[in-house]
Length: 90
Image (cartoon, rainbow, N blue to C red; front, side):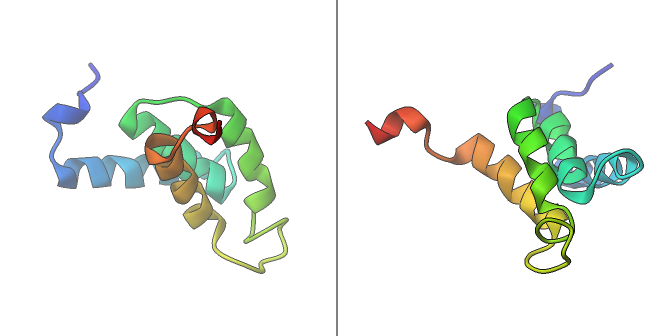
C-alpha cells in the first residue's frame, strides 16, 4: 500500500528519496535516477524532463565537467514542482 506524502515524516521522505535514487542508479544515469526518485516521492510524472536529463550525465555530456548530474536531476525535479509555467511568459 502506498503511503501518502502527508502521512510520511520528513525523515521518512528523505530516506525514501535516498533509497529510490540508489535503486534507480542500477538502471539509470545519476540525473535520471535522482529525478525519478523525486517523481515517485512527490507523486508527479514528466517523461520529457526525464529524457532531457540524459545530457547532464557526468556533469554535462559525460565530460565530468560542470555540476554533478545527480544535483541536476534534483534541481529539475524541484523546478518541475515549483517554477513558473510557460503560459506565464505571455
